[in-house]
Length: 514
Image (cartoon, helix red, strand yellow):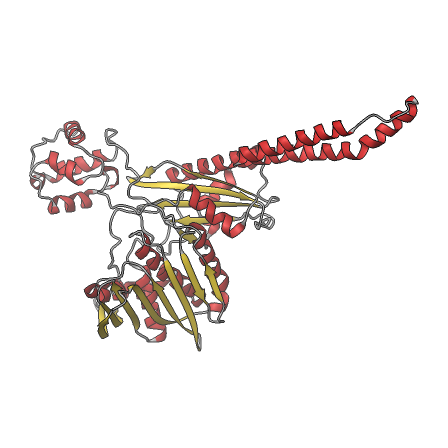
């Protein structure tokens, strides 16, 4: 009887064999996912350094279901010696920090390149520069079994114009015709959240989709923060102790955790009966376990703050919605920072009415979801946002989502978005997140109810005025004939007063709406 053969595989080999879990399960989904992942990387390279994004995407049909993708950005660029690892080593990147960013696994862009390599047998070509006097070009493959880059070619050339940014180009097997609706909608929804970006997409048919910048204002970039006590486990704390130079627990807690000062550290250690002078590297395992367990329910820690987040903001979100949908009215709100499991997050929401927003099909609703500025276009009915929308009693707010031109926008920004899958398409129903979404939507719904009530008052006044304008002359004529009076009463003063009242009501409504 033969014995089982045990072996390990690299991260690249694992995702090569299980690429469907990252959104590469068929050519249609893969085409959309590849473009999305590379555009996300390009936008992050700009936003994290307060650079107004200029992203150019071109997709060329090479025949036989093979496409060539070229993406250029004006971001910070990738250092010369890091290019091979940044583009050809799975789970290598700059996003393993506690701050908001689109990517969280160091996986998406490399998975796109890996998918291109295994479906079209081509290399990825990368040109980059950080704005110095040189720009550098690489042709790379991924060594799947060992998960390291294979450099096929590299070249350094002068950069007299001091160009800065990154250009990525590779082939892959795909199906643009069937993926087109999702891809175009992805760019449109991205422009809603980023009215400060210039985004250009040329598709295989030669059609240019252009989304121009309409404002120079950008959100404040997210800042890296230390771990919060509510969000760590035994392994994380042990790693922090191994990397720390602190020789006592008081200093260790105050220097290595988010929003923990010396007084808070001493009070916490007193509650767990650990000496503040104890050396963290000599703690017994049972003491370390006690500390970590008590951290999760100790109410003396301040909650995480929002400096590690970069929300859109009410003004920018409203500008993006108005540009794309031209609604009659939009209600926008941003909730205060909250946290789940020690990870801070902020919910932003909007409800738009009228304009270019269509009435949803029967039993459907028009819902747009975003996470860390990424449009989520798949699996709507599995998302926590849809669960919240369905449970709200909209009639209380005089809203009928199935018969009115309404659109719901929900954006969650967090250091760790609670996705249900690696493919990052829908968000788990965490109670804290669900609560914030619900109250954000209810806040918008109250504003919408007020707008519609004012609109009804204006409409009622206009109808009343129309009735008077139509019938008052007849009433004047008939009453004159019945009374035998020589002249008809002057109705102009009455009509002018009614017109003035109607105008005042309309102006008050417009001022209150603004």
